[in-house]
Figure 1: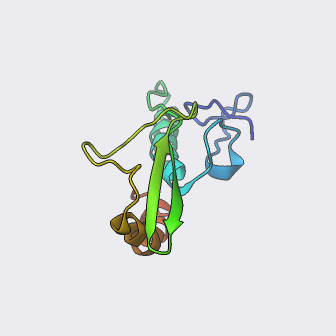
Figure 2 (figure 1 turned 90 degrees about the vertical axis):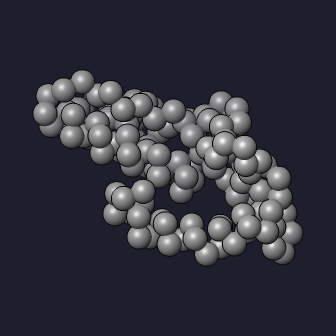
Length: 121
């Protein structure tokens, strides 16, 4: 769906919004992108309903977990131009890690189902 890639509002129909895989944004589609988009869309939808300017902007953030071995993962965090965009200061998520593997396997599914889809992440 054609949307403004920063506000996530349809470019021709102001009462239509989209995010995630359905939105024609330039970022890689991922749960991490959806988490960031959900916050932007929610803030902008409330602003639009109140007749205020859309101040929340999606910056193209995405994250892709790459399995490196049976029990290690690398998190590649980047923007829609594929420039690195780490979110945790001083933590090199681009290094392979067993902790990242556990987070990807056990924690992220819970975050997705219980927080992101309910607008709490």
